[in-house]
Image (cartoon, rainbow, N blue to C red):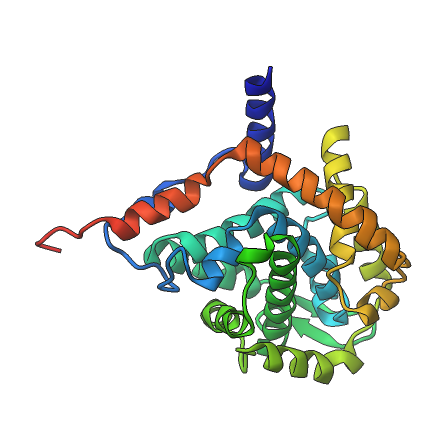
Length: 301
């Protein structure tokens, strides 16, 4: 019975996050290839991006935080198919992160080129009359910074205490993640915890919840193709609220008491996250990447 349950959960996770195909060829070779970021299993970026619960809660938090930039949200609202195909957008984002973190150098470059090509087609006028384009360096810096800030918050909250990052390791995480944003076209990317906080303080006056942002958060809270998926998403969404800065929750009109967030949301997310991690077992993607790193390149390479 437990084997059957484990298999069902693992298959559903693979379908929801990866579209049913892990595409392990992106991670297996070539032998000895260091990958785009040149990281190993002990590095902060590997640890943060490889932690399932932290990435799921951090990912939902990032979507909510990113929505507070009116121009970034206008691009999503007017060009993204997240309403008609939310799973497709989720899968695409997950693949991009796993490929650029754990994939071969060539696979990571291909993923970045594809995203840059898509960005050239995303432009228009926001409801407030301002023009926007997805390849604007300032918007790219915002999207990246909001994302990595939330990923790190998710890891620091849901990873075991003994595995959480030190202040120096948090700074290293931001440094290791920055090259991907820069290759996408971002500029002046924050590379330390202090730089991230200074950046958020500078941009804060330009952030507010538009109607599109409020609608997107409402949509996320009800997302799910099955009852079980909606339940899990709801639990992770509630937990992600606790990862947001206080001012972001206020802008989005989210009033969830501290006692609820600490005594219910976090414990529930930990239980569900550990159940999913148990069902998944060791990450096949990370295992494939480790095999690539440990392999010896051919002598004629």
